Figure: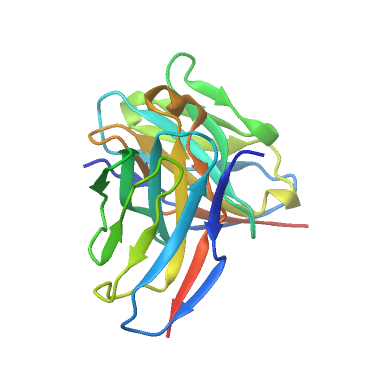
Length: 115
Length: 113
C-alpha cells in the first residue's frame, strides 16, 4: 500500500542533542511537508519541499533543518537550537499542483520527548 | 499571511445531537478549504474539501460544510453525531500566499453516550 512512513513512533533524546526524524513516502508525490502539532496550537508548518534539492522555511523553521536529496525522503533534524523541541511531528505529502484536489496525505507521526 | 481561526476548542455533545464547528480564514482571494479529522491514535484524514462550485460540500461519515465567502467562513456540520465521531477536527486553508496548507488550532469533540 502507498503511504508515508515516519519512524520512529516515539523518540527520546537528551537536551542539547540533535535528532533526525525520518519521513519516507512511496506515493511518488512531488511535495513534502513537516508540521509540528502541539495541544491547543494545531499544526504549524516547519519546512516544505516542492521538488528534490529544494525546500522552503515554513512558519516555525528556527531550530530545525531539512534535506531533500531523494524524491521519496524528507528527513527533519531537530537541532539543539530549538528551544522547545518536545512535540508531535507530522510529515505530509502532495502530488504536485493538481494533487491538491486530493488534499495532503499524512504520516502517523513521531512523538519526540526531550529530557 | 493566511490565518485560520477555530473558535470552539473543546466541544462536548450527547449522541444524536447536532454539530456545528466554526472556521474562519483571513485571506479574501481564491482559497481552497479543507476539514481534516484525527481520531485518537490515528493519522489525519481528509473529511471534505471545497474548491469551487456548490458552496455546500458533503464529505465522509455524514459530515458537510458550507463555504460563505462574505463571512470568510467554512463551518463543519453534522445533523446527528455518534460516539465514534469523538476526535479532533482541523480546518485548513490553501492559498493566500505560499504553496502550503495552513491549519487552525483544532477542535476537540467528545461525544458522550
